[in-house]
Image (tube, rainbow, N blue to C red; front, side, top):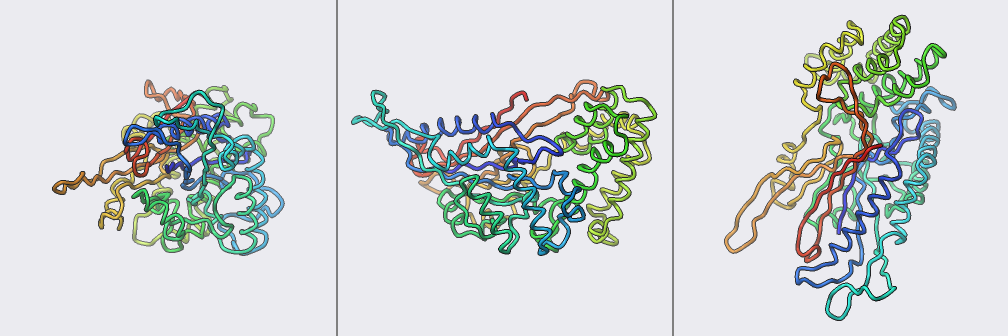
Length: 454
């Protein structure tokens, strides 16, 4: 059995909070149920599953959303600094350790899974049924594999310093990876090629289809304008409000502003800011100061070398789109932004990216060497039929796209009277599972997506 998850976004807690450890325990419970189900075979007999593979498909550990980029030591280091400098590796190591420490209970679940401590099956009896009248339990061997996305691309960097950081992650999470660069593409790992091929699955994080978070001119070992926006605007905004305004702003306001990374769709970040100012009845003068901080950060962001270098002359690109959006927020107040909320929702729907059409250009789709295509990145769980071919006397060859969604806390804008800026928080959890041979009675795949209150 193969299970794929992505976009867990484990953070150090300085900007936003990760999904709770309860989600990881719920995942372990679901895995146990899946293992029992997969042990029932196509001939209606029960044979305990021996092993399971779990693929962590990128954006698992998230160093990007950390205020430690802005603080000493090495306060000038950014993801777009020289990645081969010792200071860069030191900063990454510091943030990685903080993330692991902030998520002890969560990563312990992953580690315990890899050690065979959480998934145990009853043996079968002579009739091929579950033997309930025994204390014997059979541990299921679980192998955890890590691929990187756009929030954890640092672990794809070569070099001995990064090998040491990766080894710490491997030890803490119980990964089956070696401490060489974690793969970004399946083609970089023979182990993953063989594993996914045995299930007729092709997988990638999906960041390569997002111009804000992947630059094909540089590849995955370089930062993007998405990294720069997250740190210099998203992360820094709350930091600067606290630093420059101090007691003028209530702690509740700062806590609310710190959740910018969890607002969906992202275009509604200014509306979230406005909602927090309204909820806590921030005085008009303080609101103007906060708006001035936002405007200054937007101006400084657009002047960054990484942003200007990414701008392509005579072509409307991701930088131009950001300039247009940030220009709109600079010339209007947060209150005025309320008036365009409904338009934004109608124009951009829920703000989700859909990558299903990108699959149609994948080599494995065109040459029919894979049936199931799994991406992450969008945070939007999907199952999309792609194609089906019939051959005389054979089962249909169905090709299907899956998105593994995310494990995250969302603050989603309510549909009713959106201009009133009512955001509802909830936690989401999703995964995709694939079965081999006669596992799960011959079923090929199964997905699950759930939500629970925070």
